[in-house]
Amino acid sequence: MEKELVLVLDFGGQYNQLTARRVRELSVYSEMLPYDSSLEEIQGKNPKAIILTGGPASTYQENAPCCDPGIFELGVPVLGIGYGMQLMAFMLGGEIEGSPACEYGYSQLQILEPELLFSGMPDDIQVWLNHGDIIKKAPEEFTVSAKSDNVPIIAMSSPARRFFAVQFHTEAQKNTCGIEVLKNFLFNVTGLRGDWQMSDFIADTITSIKEKVGGKKVLCGLSGGVDSSVAAALVHKAVGDQLVCVYVDNGLMRKGESEEVIKTFQEQMKMNLVYVPAAERFLKHLQGVTDPEHKRKIIGEEFIRVFEEEKAKLGEIDYLVQGTIYSDIVESGTRTAPTIKSHHNVGGLPEDMDFKLIEPLRLLFKDEVRIIGEKLNIPPEIVWRQPFPGPGLGVRVLEEVTREKVDILREADAIVREEIKKAGLERDIWQAFAVLPPVRSVGVKDGARTYAYPIIIRAVISDDAMTAEIARLPWELLEKMARRIVAEVDGVNRVAYDITSKPPGTIEWE
Ligand code: XMP
Image 1 (cartoon, rainbow, N blue to C red):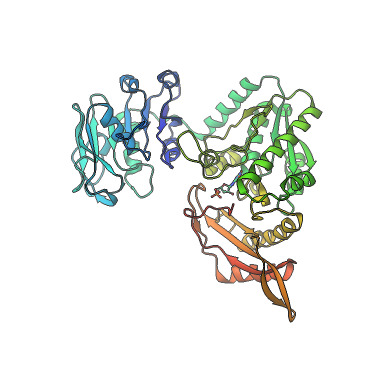
Image 2: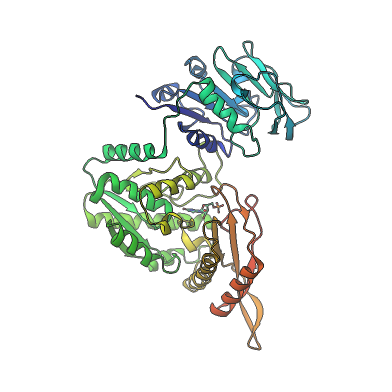
C-alpha cells in the first residue's frame, strides 16, 4: 500500500519545518517544499493533504508569495496556517485588510464550528496570535469556524471542499490546541491512517541510497559529531564497504576527539576510516582572517580540497555524504528564509565541487537524528554528544585564529566539558563550551601582574538550536570551572558566563 504523504508548502516563517516535524510526530510522513513549487512537482508527490504555512509577507504587498492556484483543484484537503490562511482567503475570493488592532498576544477563541477541526476541544481555548492583516470576509463557500473579540475570523472552513484555515500557529508550543488542530486535520478531516514511523525512514533511506549509488564508491566526511556519524552509519548500512570515511584533523577539534573517532568507527564499528592530519594547512589559510563568514568559507573549502585529494588517492569515487540537518539549511538561508550564518556543510561549499551529494538527514531535527542513531546502534557517547560546529574551535576563537589561541581554548573547553559531565548535566544541556575573545585584561597571580585572555563559558538549553535559553548552572559549578581554568590554562586570567538567550544572541559567538 502506498505510504501517506502530507506536503508542507513553505512561505518563509522561521519555524515552518516544525510543522512538517509535528506531522511526522503524529505518524504521518511529511516533507516541506518551497511555496512556488510547480503543480507538477506537487502532484508528482501524490500528497494526501497540503499545508500552507505561515510567513512574514502580506497578501497585498507587491510580489507577495503565492502558490500555484491548481493546488485548490487537486481534490486534496488543504490547511492554511497564518499567512497560509490569508493566502487561501485571498486566492479563493475573500477580503483581507490591515488589522486596526494588530494582535500580538493571547486571545480567547470563540469556537463557532465545534466539529471537524475543533472537534473534542474545550470552549475556552486561548491562542497566541501574532499578525498584522486580518480576513474581513471569508471566500464564498467558507464559514467562519472561530473568532475572537478583536478578530472576526480566526479560523474558517469549507468542509465540502475540505479546505480549512487557522490564523494561529499550530506548531507553536504556546498554542496548546495546535497539535489537536493538526490531529483533527490529518485524521478527522483527511482520514489518514498514520502509517509512518522512524524505522520506515531508515528503511526507505537505505533503499534509496542503494538505488542512487549502485556499485559506486562513496566518500564521507566524518567529524565524529552526531550528524555526520549517523549519516555515515546509514550509508554504511546501505552500501557497506563501498563507503570510505575520511576524518580530517583540521587542528580545530576538541581535546581527545581524534583518538575517540578512530576508536569508535575504525575499531568498534568496523568502518573504512582514513585519518588525515591537516592542522597546518587549515591554520595557514586562516592566518590574518577575522571575519566569521570568511573563516567558515575557508574551512569549508579546505575540507572539500582535502576530500578531493583523498578521492584522488582512492580512485573512482562519485558521491559525498554530508551530515547536513534541517537547522543547518534554515540558518544558511533557504529560498524563503534569510541567511543568519552559513554553516560550513551547506553555505560554504565551493561551487566547483567535484562530487554528487548524499544528505540523508537534511529534513530532520537533531533529536530525530539521535533517535535514528540509537536505532542504528551507534554508541551512546556519540549519539548523545553535544553538537559541535563544522568549523570547530575556529569559530570559538573569535577573530583571528592562531595555534596559540586554539591551544588555550582547547584546554579551557576540556575543563568545561569535564565538569559538566561530572555534574551529570551533559544530556540536559544542549551545548556547553568555552569561547576565547580577542581581548586581554589585567589580573594578578602569585603577587605579580598578568595581562591575559578571558574565557567565556556558554551553556544553553535547546530543542533544535533554532532558539535557546541559558542553562542556569549552579554557582558552585561555575566557580569550580573558573578556578580550574585560571589555574590550569596558561594565558587565561579571567572567566565570564554568557547569559544571553537565542535570539537575540546565537549559540556560537561567531
Ligand atoms: P548558532 O550559533 O547559529 O548555532 O545559534 C546553531 C547550532 O548550529 C551550530 N553551528 C554550526 N554547525 N557549521 C556547523 O556544522 C557551522 O558553521 C555552525 N555554526 C553554528 C551550533 O554549534 C549550534 O548547535
